Length: 162
Image 1 (cartoon, one colour):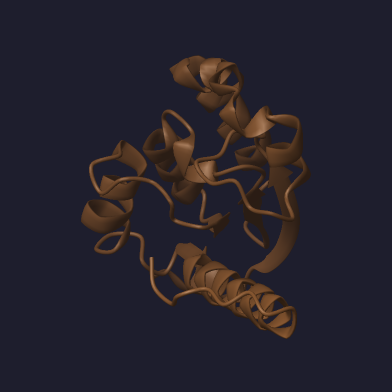
Image 2 (cartoon, rainbow, N blue to C red):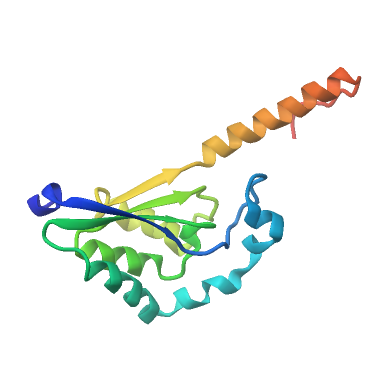
């Protein structure tokens, strides 16, 4: 890691990429309106030139003393086609990426493979990953247990398990 990145001041931007997601969280208004299943939102990200435009926007604004911490959110950011290209281009100028993700994509998805194969090795210090999957599972369990408890008050008993 170079010294310049250590001493850089960080500009933080939350980048809402799209609504598309692989999970239908009970609290998510995208799931309520069906937007999470709209894969057409991914179309512009399939074009490498579009990805270069996004990276160029932030890289032109990164300087020797200023870098970006980009917090990708909105749906499931790992569904973004060309995620690896965007990550590599942004990291070339010392920018960092944080992902708000539930990690609800398959092991064979290109973005997941990138995280495991490259980011974990080459960009570990440049790529921060915020996983919320465990939290979602705990919240789901709490809701199910609460429903079971309320139902029991009315004499409805539900078996545990799946």
